Image 1 (tube, rainbow, N blue to C red):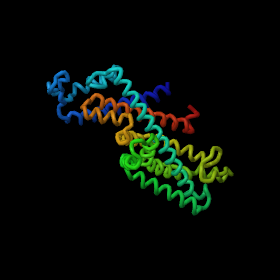
Image 2: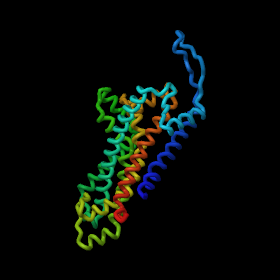
Image 3: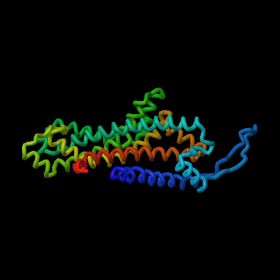
Image 4: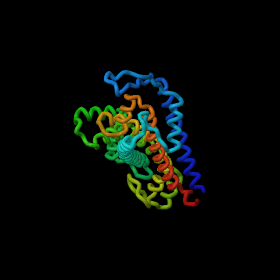
Length: 308
């Protein structure tokens, strides 16, 4: 019963609430758009036969179709071809975001942990000039790249490499330019430094438990501190995922990737507003799934979870 309550509160209820806020906010902005011209495609001169504006009733109709699992994702009708195309593009975008997020998290946690271990002399010993210099250099480089939006990096890479580039270049642009690495690195460094300075680490060292140099290794005191650090790092890091998702949409447009970014641009150009809301909802659900997974991992790492 406790597990079902956890899933309902941390995933189902939160996804519904955030999805409602996100789509309702987009809906309010869409109300300000001018009326959409509907042309007679059967006529030779392609004349305008009516003007349609986005209304509250259309939003309620779209939301009802989503809730009843009969999605009306386009004002042109929901065909099998459109569902297949949306599914294909969504898989491409979510794969790109997942790879970029995992790489950003790994690099950020690695650099942050190393920085914290170097600064903690009672665990890693006296500071060594070379590791300190390398750590500071890596942090500086990451800070410089994180200060540049990913779409700017993608555009520069696009100019240098051309349209024949592979998926690795959009991934690099997202990893270096989304700002997630530096956020995760700062968070990890601060949290891990606090854990390394905690009383239980000092007591463990006094009892003879060995350290593991600059990197936490299972069975050593630094691993216990790192394990406790992850309880804070994982959920907070997952909330950086919207940075990568929003940046990925722009990167896909620049590199011409068959993802949701190009689909979103096309739907805005055609003023296919139900499709715009559907793409936003897919992004929200993806982020909430990742946040929920991070919550589960943090719960499993918590020392008291073994008593439940």
